[in-house]
Amino acid sequence: MFLPLHDGVPLKNIRTPFATRAIVGVCIVLYGLTFYGPLGPDAMVAGLGLIPAVLLGTEVLPQGYPFVPVELTLATNIFLHGTLFHLVGNLLFLWVFGDNVEDAMGHLRFVIFFVLCGTLASLAHVLVDPHSHRPLIGASGGISGVVAAYLILYPRVRIWGLFLKGGIPLRLPAFWAIGFWFVLQFISAFFSADDGIGWFAHLGGFAAGAILVLRMRRRDDPLLARIEAREAHAPR
View 1: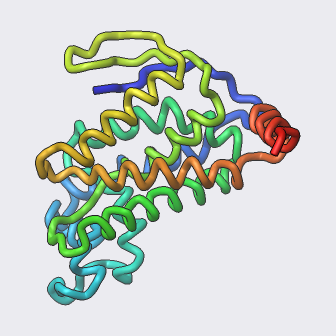
View 2: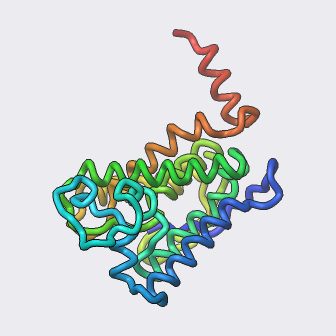
View 3: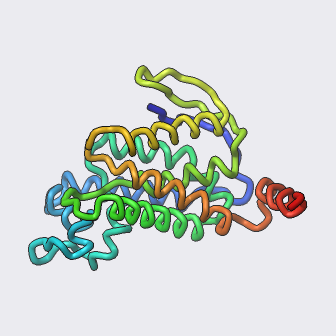
């Protein structure tokens, strides 16, 4: 287990991470509508969640579902959560890492980045389990992309987090903290029993974030500029 608590990296390009806060707000509102709204959890999940078999046309939901064109459920599912722990855990990752990635991209590009990572994560889940009837929901895929971007942008920043089953508080460089988290995702994806968690969505979102951040960050980002300059002058 790894839960980030604080990184302390100051914002340099924006004053307030409006996009990060907006995504947090949307997830909280939809959680409230899911469990306390008029439709109920089953209808909300069927209406906005991703069901691979439905997306690929091998199964059909009752009339009126999903609420959006079925292709859009690749994105809409990332704003739903099934339990309070699911919601709080995901939003904690987004709160700690999202503001600094948003700072490196700008508000609009960060929203696009998050949705793209979540959509590609959903697609990875479909490719691995195309016949699944189980709905996929949760921001984990998009957040995995944010985590990958943070690792590339701030690999040496020290992060306070809770580690291992007992929740041991440690302050470690992002490279080690996120590396530990990634290893857990990888092991779970390939070696864990079917526990209903879209582990391959996490891996897909992480890969998407690592690729997209190089295109979507600000051109004047000093860290990546140094990396690019070093690679450009490296011997071939």
